[in-house]
Amino acid sequence: MTAAAHDLMTVASLTVDYRQQGQWHSVIRDLSLAVRRGEILGLAGESGCGKSTLASVLLGERRGERRLRAGSVQFDGIDLSTLRARELRRLRGVRLALVPQNGGASLTPTLRIGSLFAETLRAHRPHMNKAELAAEARRQLSQVGLPDPTGALARFPHQFSGGQQQRIALALALCRMPDLLILDEPTTGQDAMTRRGIIDLLIRLRLSSRMSMLYVSHDLATLSEICDRIAIMHAGEIVEIGQMEDVLLRPRHPYTRALVASIPRLEAPPDPALLPASRRTPERITA
Ligand SMILES: Nc1ncnc2c1ncn2[C@@H]1O[C@H](COP(=O)(O)OP(=O)(O)OP(=O)(O)O)[C@@H](O)[C@H]1O
Ligand SMILES: [Mg+2]
Image (cartoon, rainbow, N blue to C red):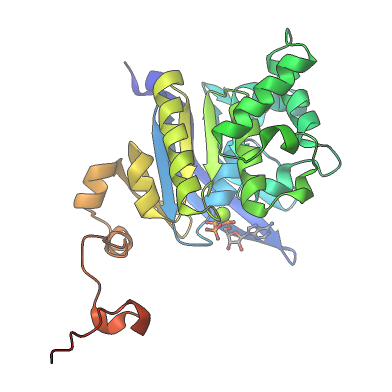
């Protein structure tokens, strides 16, 4: 198989600028990257290094304050810059999906959750009647661990917490069964149990559907649980990319080394002097 055949999304020598006060500043510089078919690729890097910008560009989103100064983004051999707005919308509706970092903001505020699902599902399951659409929406919502999925369908987005809105956005993206799902910090703001549930769900989906995923996070510990490969981004560039274990065990770039060193290691016993008094082992008092 050639490299082109097993790559679903290819970014070549991409440079992206934002305009601020009339000046263009580059945020992504000469970046090349490929997401392979059926893999979960992690993208890690510090806050502000350009992860969400890259996620948005990969989705073909166009904004007045942003320009692609150089390079190209290809999805399954299609150069996104050559597509008209309508063609891009169709691609995004069916084959390409993003759960944005602020997932709640992507939910239309005036529509109840049931209508949001009906709208999305109707395009993908045109044969389903109303009851079947509601049943499928409930199934998707319980998959992401939302309590009371039936009640949830009648509520508006603002009646959920930020973490719950994020999970609703994830469920909506999943019901499209895209070929490539881009997840921007999908578990940030979720409690540990919910985070575990989402990670297990994504791993199951990857195994059962061969859906490709780009999982964006600054949390290397989470990425190490789910990703096949990982790309490390620093100041708008990819400084290292490789198999997850290789990068964790043998980080080559100094920034990657610092990132790996910062993963909390649960097996190391905490320094008792640093624990709050309430968690220190009480000293044994012997008579
Ligand atoms: N609309 C915009 N106009 C101007 N600059 C922007 C705009 N959006 C983002 N930037 C700048 O681009 C850089 C990258 O931002 P981006 O949101 O892609 O970072 P990130 O890696 O996703 O960070 P985080 O981990 O905090 O989500 C930042 O310096 C940011 O200030
Ligand atoms: Mg971001």
